[in-house]
Length: 408
Image (cartoon, rainbow, N blue to C red; front, side, top):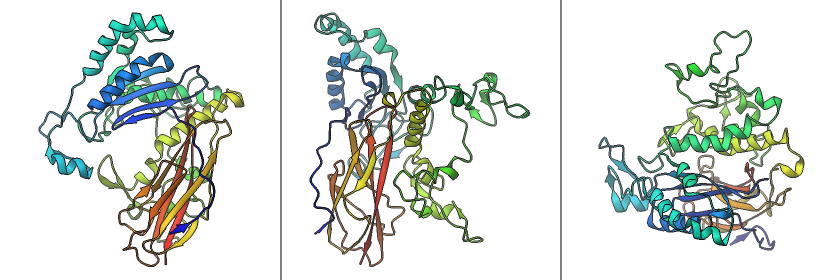
């Protein structure tokens, strides 16, 4: 056994997140009096029970969305007879190829809200703040439900979440700088550029662009270049081939001093189920956008009203030699300048490491985890382990540390 740290176990404060199978209660504490919450759920029976419990505590937080989603256990199918096989080994073995799977429909939340309406008058006798049934009904949206992990198209639910998480938290209400940020249908026009018609609301349905909604984001063509320079703990500035917010790069064949993307650094995209040379950058988009929103708050809020990134450290070296069969004790810690609760996640960045076999990290959601080095690892092969720490304030900010294990 290799013990990389003798430090004490850290006691992590609770983060207000409840996840039961594919139900996710995304909760973030901000300057609002109550946590703001969006619920996504596929309707597994245990998720239904969680939904009922959530309604009984609905006065404790601001519910901002109720979205139907699919999962490995439930999906509707596309209605065209398309057959689908789960990416998850368990459900692949259990169900094989299916056109749909145990789909409970898109009315069960409304049915529970109807029952909530019957007891709502009595609930209000005991506490203030219970949302009205009509308000809850207005929040029900349908997301990607055709197949497990479906994310390839915009839906009522995804657009609703996007509007809640991004547009109002970056562009509007954050001062004159972000107000100048161009987005589709925003009414802005760049002087001197006759082809800049993206801001014209009448052009949102465009054969060249496709279909966009108001304030949808326009691609930022140069951002990956400077995102490499932001030190978030991934060590990609010194090692562009390691991968980070700016993507993952390789030395140019024609000019070794230049780094570029390409098929050689393509990664498996779990949403398209294909190798994708853009995925080394797009895998970070959610984190990037939330970090962008937090920075936008800095334009108009005092320090104690805004969010700031946690500081993450490893309690052991970040480059370690290992032998086959070793049990590596992983240890990290983080502090947050705002005193926010923190969540920990250890995960293998397998596309970067040269060892391509299966890896199992135990206690991966704690500050102290462990990894058994596979017996079939060969001398010189590497394993990259990322420690990811996110805070509980909205917009969430995330930082990292990277551990590189090399087989002797």
